[in-house]
Structures are given as C-alpha cells and as structure tokens.
Length: 599
Ligand SMILES: *[C@@H]1O[C@H](CO)[C@@H](O)[C@H](O)[C@H]1NC(C)=O
Image 1 (cartoon, helix red, strand yellow):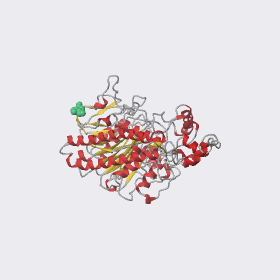
Image 2 (tube, rainbow, N blue to C red):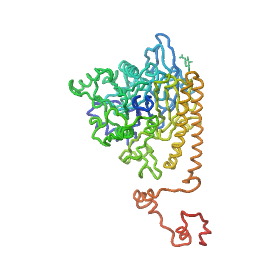
Image 3 (cartoon, rainbow, N blue to C red):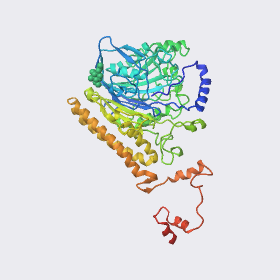
Image 4 (tube, helix red, strand yellow):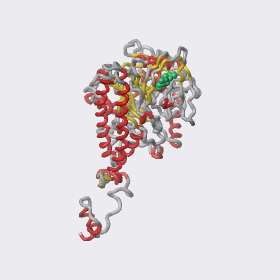
C-alpha cells in the first residue's frame, strides 16, 4: 500500500528546505503520516513443509478497498489490447467491465474508469486472486507488496505524466502472464521500462518493492521511475534457498551483479543513470539501496525495527543490533537470513500479528498502551500537530485493510496447492482462512466491504468490528480473540489436508468446503463481537467490575499532576459510617448501604 498522493520531485538540494516547509504546512492543514505495508518471504528450504510462504499486509488509512476477488483465466483474440487503468486503491479500486470481474461492474450511479493506456494482450491469461495487488495465480506464483522511498518520482499518464504502469497494474500483469517467479520479475521489469513506472509521491512512496514467490524459489523485486519519468529502473535478487527475507517500506537489495543472472535480474540503465548523476563511478561498489532509495520514510526505525523484529523472531541467535546510524548507508541487517529453526505457516502469521511484545519497544506495555495494553496508536487529531514525536512502527496495525500469507506447494497440483491464507483487517485480531487458487468462486463475505459503510455481510467489517471492540479491554479481550483465531486456523489446516486429497478431482467440492469454512468464521466472528460485549461491557468481566490495573492508577499521578488521576483525586469522605464501611468492605463483599450503616 502506498501513501496518499504527494507533490512531484524537486532537485535534491532543495529537498530538506522544501520538506521542512511541506512538513510545516502539513502540520497546520491535514497532518499526514506515511502509511505502508510489511512483506515477508520464506523460501521452500526454510520452511517445515517445503512450501514457499509469501506474506503481505495492506496498511492504508481505513479507506483502502479490502475485497479479495478472483480473476478468471481467459483466452484473447490475436491483436487484442489490454486496458491499463490508474491505480486507485481506495474503495472501489476499479469500476468497469474491461477487467471482466463481476464485483467491479458499475452500479447504476457509477461511471466506469477510463483507461490511461493500452498494451498488447497475450493469447492466454491465468486465473488469480487479487486484493489491491495480485496475490497468487494458478501457477502458484505469489506476490507481496511494500511501498518504498525512491530518488525519482514520475506522474502517471492523465495527470501530467507519461508513465502508465503502477505497481498494482504490474502485479496484475505478472499474475496474468507469469508461470514462475523469475518470469514474473522479468515481465514486470520489461513492461515498466517500456511503458514507464509511476509511484505515488515524491519524497516518499515513489518506488515499490514486491516479493515474488513460486513453488521453487523467491525473489525480491525493486522498482522506481527513471530520471525522465517515462521508463523505469529495476532490480531483482533471488532469495537464497533456506533463507527468509523481509521488506518493510525500504529497498534491501545492496550490491548488484547482473552478470550473475542466476541470482540477479535488472535494467542496465541503473548503472548509466547512477553514473550520470555522479552517484557512482565504474569500478566502485554499486549499492542499489544507497543509490536509489531515499531511506526510511516517516521516521528512523520505521523500516529497521520491523526487519530487526522479524529476524529476531526467526533467528534469535543472530542478535542483530536494535540501532544504527542511517539504514540507507549502514546496512545493519542482511538481505536475508537462515532461520534458527524451520519456519511454520504459523510462524509467519505470528510475525504478521506482532506488536513488538516482550521487547524494549513493546506496544502493549506502558502508559502509551493505556490501562489495558492496546498496541493500537490512532492517527490524526491535534496531537500529531501539537506534539512532536513518533510511535514505534510494529508489523501489525489496526489500519490494515487485509493481510495474507500466500503458500505455494510444489508437491501438489497447482490448482489445489496454491493457497492464500487471507485475513481481513488488522493481522493482530484476524483469522487467516485458506482459499485454493482452483476454487471456482470465493465466499461473498470476502468479496464485499466498503470501509465507509458498515456491512454485516462483510468479512472485513466482522473483523474490523471485533478488533475495535477489543480496545475496550485489549489485554483480556485479545486472549479471547486469539483463542478463536487459533481454533479456526487449526480447523482450517485440517481442512486443507482433507481438500488436498479431493480438490483436483472435484473442484466444486473444494470450492464448497473452503467457502463453508470461511462462512463459519464470519458467523462466529459476529457472535464473538456479541460475546465480547456481553462479557466486558462497562468495565466488567461477566458482570463483575474489574476496574483498572494498580500500575496504571499509580502512573496517572505522574502523567497528570495535580488535577486528575486516581491517587491524587478527591480525598475520602470525612469519617462517617460510609467511610468505615468502605475501609472494611471494599473489594471484598457487596453490601447495601443500609447494611453498611449498621456495621
Ligand atoms: C469473463 O469471465 C467469465 C467468468 O467469470 C468467463 O466465463 C468469460 O468467458 C469471461 N469473458 C471474457 C470475454 O473473457
């Protein structure tokens, strides 16, 4: 997911000054933080079952289209053209007939999108799932997206520029055309060079990264516009088998060796452009990230903390540093790592759900988490403009529209083996449910979801509802939620084992079984919302007042002396029967005031 559209690039020297002005202006108008996504790829040699796991969280601002849809395979007439649309990521992400997806057909008050370009179509396109980006296709090629900063920006065609390829469109074209991850990378790179790539902004979000997996291998793909705004610069590096990698809103590919085509692919213009700008001289080390990345966006550790955390979970023995000077140049974390123990599907899900628990940066601890340890840190409001500072950036966020783990399993027929474990809304309170790429349809609940209109038929809304409710008393309610999500994920794993045996013979049955499972989740999630309300309403647990933790009441005096707070709140009543009652009985036994008077 990319940040909101921002003005176009300016000469590098002007940037600090203009950034300062822009920041000042943004503070007094609409404060805008950068929003973004986290991606993790585990190669077959790094996982317990030998599958490739490719994970993405789509972290917007509560306006991103959360729908998962299936695009059918199709044959195309010779000389036909494929329409290219502007990447509009908010709801609805696309309206029209051109893409032949019934969920995108216009309703009577909607106008179909006009294409911003057309490219030659291929004779046959593969079936795939997509959310904002392509997810997995019927060859088990998977994609996970994360927006990055870049040194060049470009405007799209129709908005003053020439470029027609967004990362959204590239990911769709890769799904439609590629049978392997390597092919996907080459196809996307070539199309972007030919038709021009545009990102979202200038200071941040002009560049993109995709993790691309297939049953046998995984690649990291980075792309940004070239210096003319009409082409692209791109590079891709294969993730060593046995390794896991994470991209979190910043490039990670360092030294590039295009002569090693087994492990590197890319556009040769990277060298000539870097040289012409005086950023590189032939013979010296070519560090793609140092040259073309604009570093971390939003704040220091915005990227590095997530890499550190994922690596710390996967390989605690590595003991990577938690700090560094400038990640763009100092490269404190490797491109990929071998995990200490082989990775389970559940390991990746746990990383996606992570809020830095148990680390010095724990989002669920301390006063900022409130009395009930919520990891959520809302955005906007006058706080952002009046108080300088930043929150830590955990992997799981409340403002995620959806996250998933795509799984490619080489020992199974692709239609059955290619799965997406799809989790609506924030990963920390979601249920990941499996859908196989050979399914004939998806459950309606996952195909609908307007983020600005509560809809009880929508999977997104069911999960958004429960996650928000959990902020009443996160520390307890998240346990109830996790108990349910674990239960459903275990059930789902067992179901996958069963469907694997029959899916190829009976795609209809496979479709029905996976849909029934997902429908069960949505039904139970609305029930969970009611159960949580019943259990925790008004600061109670099942009708018993449980109040606030002592540490928080004590902390309140430090945060707000001397007016509000508990220890320094109004004094006890003067010595009366009621006070004696309070001293004697409070917290022990419920007595009526009349009883207190006689005690
Ligand atoms: C549109 O998609 C449907 C399946 O959803 C398919 O049957 C039909 O052939 C497609 N039409 C074209 C023109 O590709």
